[in-house]
Image 1 (tube, rainbow, N blue to C red):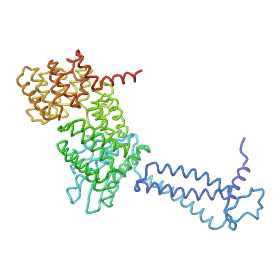
Image 2 (cartoon, one colour):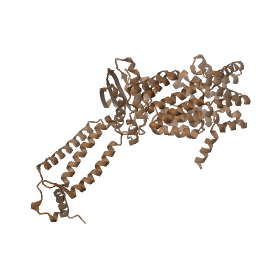
Image 3 (cartoon, rainbow, N blue to C red):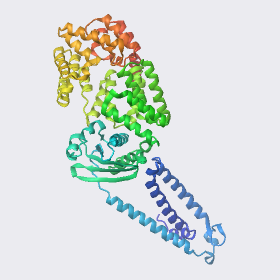
Length: 605
């Protein structure tokens, strides 16, 4: 039945008599202003991402309360706040005449609402429209350093790195190119379209960094190269001490203009300011710069810098995570430290980082490394790796080690899923896919991937190709490629891993003296250092050559030294010769493999 228009008219008149309409108008204008101000000032004040949603909820609740109160009560010109009488009890001559102040407030409110709506519409129209069907793939090129001080290069690169790290955390991005991949494009004369094609991205961010005294000038522009148009650009001219917050705003602006959805929790993590101590922040960036440009050779210097960072700001969660990772890497690759001590020191750093901030991906990653490499608790390692990916779903550099983890656990299908994700990005994963094919018995596919690896990497692939051929028992080919790496003086050929590989290639191709000479060098090395696990690879060599007792002797030493190579015990074809011996299965259980097998079996039930 249709509603009686007289009833609607009477209700509308009653709303006006009780001044509810006027109150709603003024409330709406005030709410618009509050929301617009919050949207503008929230990023600069470092407010959490849920602030705007929280205020919207408050305003909605406030709206309901305001309507109810305005229906029941009124502000009388003479009697203050009074209860509004029902319509049938009020004579027309007793209805108060609206004051000019109420009329003015109403008119002003309407004008404010119209102005704000107009500004929003105009602002939306001025924004460049993007093709939402395009994949949200982006490369942040190294910012150009135009500072008078050339020493600012580490801060300039740090700005680039931080923006990339923030974008890693937004799952709706299809692809975010790593800093390692974009470092090849530091030439100021770079061609943006060609770079986009080479990296396989639809969008490029480039910028300029300039520090003059205590002032900082950063210019950033988001480009769609294929259409040669700028989607967004902004200049940040502010005090140098505010540099810590710039990368946050740039990352969120990129996501906003590319219409990339991000959750409240993702926004909160991105907006978290790691430290307010500028000196600590600079030292942290310097440590990461040394690691990026000089690698693991300067780990001691890097650790010293990070320890100074922690002294300057004991609440800098990221610094603890980096300190833990650097400490662990030094123990594994530099040697000279008892691994139990290394584990303890690294664990303290990771626990402190997570105590300060549960969302530090680096700390979860470090705990994954400890549990896999040294504690051999693969269940916990997997849990920490998955947590790392949840926090940084687009950080493909983390995926490589997880691929290796799944191969070690003989979870080849899971490894292939992560390899696919890596290959959709800006890099290619060759080692994992080749080992997976070999372990699956797909030699034809393994050859195809080895060829692709050689074409992509060139001479640097020689030692790796030699290793793959050893896995396939093609010893003549293995020797050829390992000797090529030796001739090219590839520094990696002199680490215990490749020393053992070359020794095995010589042994299998009847160059017994050469093989024995290298193994003796490896044994001597094991007396002075655990770096590179010489005892493990000596046991690995003896296992391949069928010297079973010697193999177990050296593998037991590797076990006692907590060699991070022990997880390979399950799948490396070198150990097939040991699997008829009970000592192998005892070692298999002590290195955590049986517990993980039981865990996988329970998941299938």
